[in-house]
Length: 225
Image (cartoon, rainbow, N blue to C red; front, side, top):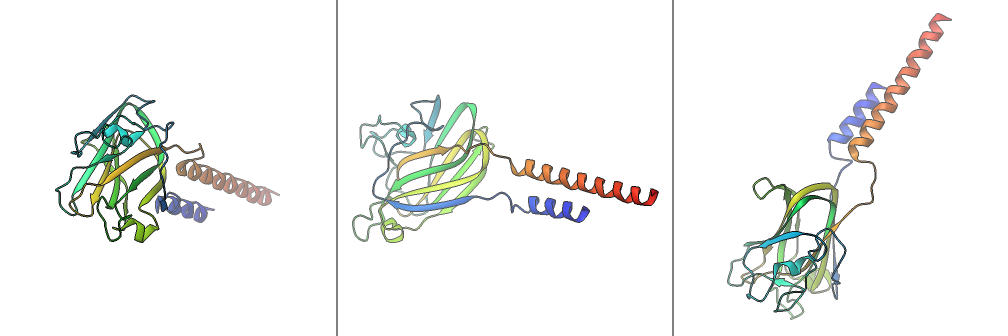
């Protein structure tokens, strides 16, 4: 019984129970969501970003908004950068938000044969209670030419992970070349409540302990008889 308990503990602490799942698919069009935790039209969120281009873009359009005067419903970061440069968007909330995944909608210019403009080579999420105390939740590499890699210039990246509770979420995009990435939307995913990995571990250990006690009692009864 002790051996089984040790196996359960090793299984938990090795990370085998908890994992991050990332899936990327090509899409012909992206629908704007209007009912998730990052939707600025429903929640009191502050949105910050690195330099957008041109001035007619509004950072809130990456979180359900349609208020920008230049291509409403999406944002494009400033051009004239360098390959590998990191651009970012961030949302801050007065109240803690609990999420267990995100969905990124974006597209590059690969609908023009051979073009990788507006592309992203890496997408990263960090979270915490303020900009100075962030930890990385996940990092996902992306291929440079979306149409060539995923069959469409538009893609949706979905990442699910153990529930994260924070008030500040920062999304980073590493650009392919000098052109600024294009972001259509970032949605929060909220999981259906289910037992956490820690709860499962505690239940498992309790079961092992109960079985061990029963076995010990049977042995005592046999000896006494």
